[in-house]
Length: 360
Image 1 (cartoon, rainbow, N blue to C red):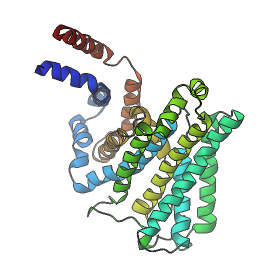
Image 2: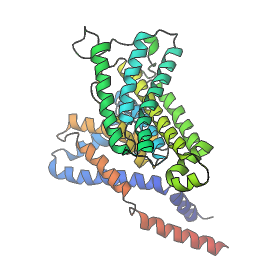
Image 3: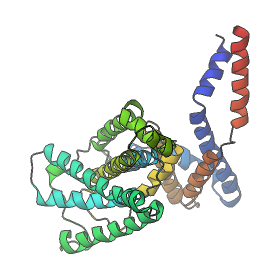
């Protein structure tokens, strides 16, 4: 096989990854064209956006720190989307898991290792229980899952705020925050000079297990089939309701796990009074990753990198950080545009087919 044939097959095989990378570069390129006309520091903007996040260990650490909660919510949304249900309650699950984390960390006392493990497990269960609510009422009463899940987020927000302000708040603080958690209830920070913590290892394990569940088990197959063709799945004997609810529950567990890990690893207390927005970021990540758990950390890294660069651009140049949101929006638009690079792929497939036919 010639080098050209090998390259053509590799491009076809990894076409979606190439398309996503091209969408990101195209979005950045379009924004940079605008910036060249409106900014007095266009080259500085490009430097701080592309190079700035890796100029120091601390700055690179902020990318990894943000990647962890984004990836957990992205995994959660991936699981929910496997069954073709647009459940948007991951944001609420992430938030209320922080409340559960604070209650357990402040009112229990267990040995090291066991303590944070128990907190993460219970918070994950809390997240799973709340995200299954809109899925259940959708299956049982045909309530619109998008509307009910968004409304549930507000219920969880005000429930969490009530717990924080009236039960968990430390009165000696000038802000609404709990006492700092005991040392043996926290996740260990593993890179000096950053806040990168052992939650990164839990994330790697979660990605592996989620991918195996989705693509290598009967449960995952039934979930995907229930989402792709529910009528036929029921016809062949698959209990679609069970698998749909299971996918929502597991997705909520992953989001809840992310909330607990963020609370114990970064904040080391609970002071959340508003949604952090990671659930909706997770939706964006799942869409870009095509619901593939293995791709979620890569997409989360790209978004984290862009946001870290956008923050530096905001502080170092005359361009506001909001332009990163514009880049994200353009990336989603370009990825959703199925025709992007489609002619290229079509020509490569034809050439590959002709080459194989000639070889035979």
